[in-house]
Length: 197
Image (cartoon, rainbow, N blue to C red; front, side, top):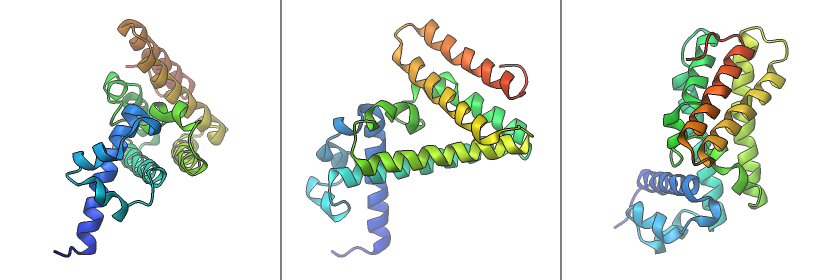
């Protein structure tokens, strides 16, 4: 039976969704193509109809993860008031729910360490995703009148990503919660976003 291009795109999207989840959870080096294809309801043999290699799958999954992160930012920070929008995104990013959603959350804290050891294409895609998030943050900071929006955004993104990565890495739940709370309070104070929640 022949399927149309729409079916192929939907199938590719299912594979990318499963790959993104597994890459976030295990890192690019820990994924298995056969398992991803099985969870997407496909056979391992069908993989090469969509991707030329495992590295190509990782690169495409990174793009998909950053597209999802961009959409999440747009939903979370949809408020017309840039100060409220930025605060809403910080609230989401430094939440225990985001910390605990490693397989669904932002790829930056989940993959920073792993991508440093990946191939150039994956690192380029990761860098593009980072630049996109930083630019969206800079725009919010520009709209609220921050003197150096690009520099402030780069610092904010580093603080958000670092806080989530550290909060995920420690074993003590109280220490993990404190990392998130301290970063939240610091970011809100630094950018004049009101008292920390």
